Length: 254
Image 1: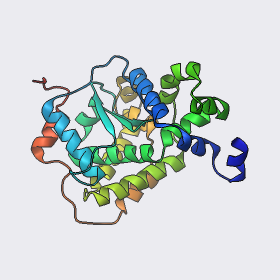
Image 2: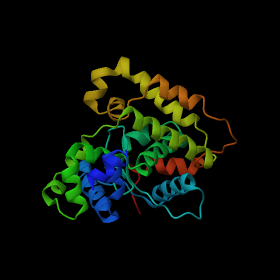
Image 3: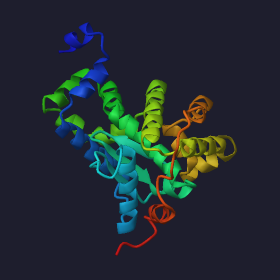
């Protein structure tokens, strides 16, 4: 199988990622979420959940689309969001509280959807564990590898090319959804400004620097967002929805 992949002049890691059965993807995603959340409580309120689902459906093309992503919010001060195999996306309380608008969150969420759609979590995993272990997973084995898969996935970092691809996917999704890309750029510009003055203090406290470590914003990336095609747009959420989402970890569920 690997010989055929080489002959086809394709990336072995990405090709194997595409070949993963959905059951394997879902299992990998579950292990990752369990490892990363580390018993931290999930944030859920009826209004907050509804607001998140509204944003997801908007990014997917409209209210009639069934969400193909499972997005969860974790009660965690870390400023971050990340995609796992199986189309799962984790958003932290820190990110929601740090964002200054719903469109900022929508931009970050669209970026993570880009990673998931392009199978970046699976591809990065294959590169880390190697093709032999990946083939074993595809064939239904690798229980030992699977047991430690969550830890491995939390330590992955994307290549510059992968980040660029996810950015491009995010910009396309935002335009299709008629959500302004300005929020996306504003968020990363603000995060980037925290890099120099905040430094170690923010890193120790679990703030913006956590986002920088896993999604390093660069002037080139920010410039790409700023130069995105202009189009008519409306807010991703209304004010009541945004308030409900931003307070999803602080409001008590009924």
